[in-house]
Length: 505
Image (cartoon, rainbow, N blue to C red; front, side, top):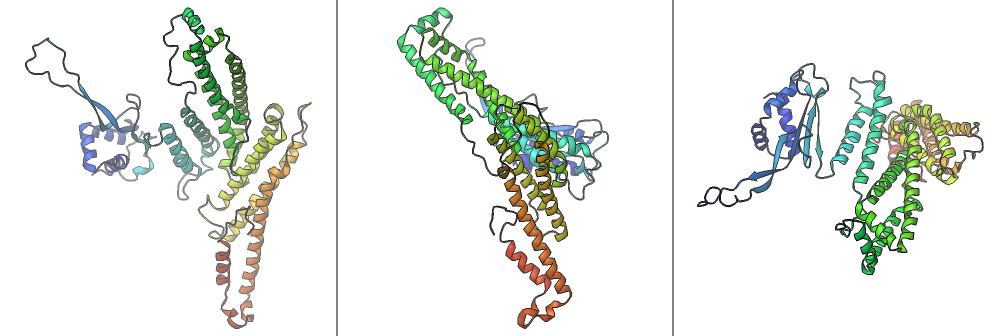
């Protein structure tokens, strides 16, 4: 069989979990073979999209015998759900199950039978388990971004040949994935004002609303309803006044996504307020001069304030996102080039924002930048946690450690430079708790300096052994050799996380 067809059928088997004979039945019943072959031909199809999900099947029941023509109604059809595998263009049918996709970028030539994997892209999305938005976000972040940011060592692609991937495509994909995460959270938000009751559905005009406002029982019921709304809204509003619980590894991207979610949450809340049921309920209480209206107005003002605050903060942090891409995508050597623009942007935010104009809040933002620098250094040293400092060449690791230490030095020096720069008149000086912001990185670099000192000590001992100093050892000491000593030291030290600067060992 054509290896390209064999690959396609195996992909469908993996995506649906169906046996091979069932896949072949679906392929022939849906006349898919010609469409599949067109993907392999030049200037034909460039993508294939399969859905495997429940499809409605309508079975018309026969008219009972003995019924005269034109008399009586035919029995209603039987509608059943049945899982089917079928091709779609992505627009004709709503996606609710499993999607298997294949596509080509270059269709100017035929897809070869040998090595076709290089030109063919494929994947599986499962909307049943995690939802469509989450499925796309995970594929983009963990498959495509990972492959583009860290190509295989034997690949033909080179960063110097394709700088647009590093400079434009990857930052764009990061921003896109961030937007999908926000979208996912907002989609899961429930309508706070939907209590399952429709007291205003029967109202036809303003006169009926006035009559309702004269009924004490109705007013009491509506007041309880609005009080419940206020209670739910205040739970969301109180988050602005509380300290956020954040992990030690929170980065600037987390800050951006928090304010994006917050802004989208209040935007959605404001749209729910425009619902006819909500507006008529408030109008009825206003006509009745209810005391609850004053509480609601105060709540409404707080909603407006928090909405504007979240929208402004998201806008300010969004301006910083472009500078932050380097913290996530580059190594410590290249990050140094973006620190100046990053800190200048933070200083501008500190001067203009009504939220980040305090030392405490700008310190919290700066700590997130420091956290990401430390995390990037750890990934750089350990090859994204695939190696240890012992599994790599000692000289290579030593250079990496020095690069991380130099990054910390540049970080602090750039801050002092930006701090002393003349800026807008009548603005507070750009300052924060330096020990709080730089202390973690300083402690981390002290750890790295100790590792470098240990490497130097091991090199000194190795030099001694190379000069045959082991001949001076007495007793069983002569059995020791440089490899044995080095292995023993490594086994003792690898029991601890050497890059954990919080560890005292």
